[in-house]
Image (spheres, rainbow, N blue to C red):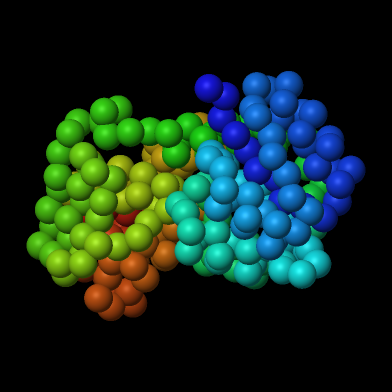
Length: 228
């Protein structure tokens, strides 16, 4: 069965063009012209990825993304006409998996869609079946679950893949380039901002004091490691 992409954008022309481009790449397309209708589609149908515009009537992309995260951990790619660091950070705070600035090429977006879906479809069978324990942090590769101080923690697919990659290489320093290649894919190498943002958000979720992390350690000038 082909993977299904939900496009939420108030620009019907862009929806049509994106639908044609992604349809040619083999994806099934669903669409909505505002966040409220998009959430209804997501609630009623199986969707593998959401492409979400920021500026929309009735409910903007930020709020829509937050509502999506209340319903599902489906991967989200945010589209925006703004090219500012603050907007990118806001998008990652909402739990997006990638961030594409308009104008963009359909080839670029299709490549990003493919990379995000590849990360999301990875299963524990693709990796060694293990449970990694670091004091009060448990990374369960079998069940794609993280437990911190006895309580489950909700992570997006990208956040989980990043944490699992660090856990599989416990005690070993991984550079930005290594993490980008292993978690996001080789086409993302050269964009260290992704790693820095996701490390920050992971620390907010798993560290008791994110400003003094005990689990994810920064090795300045080299990269990051999990554990000793």
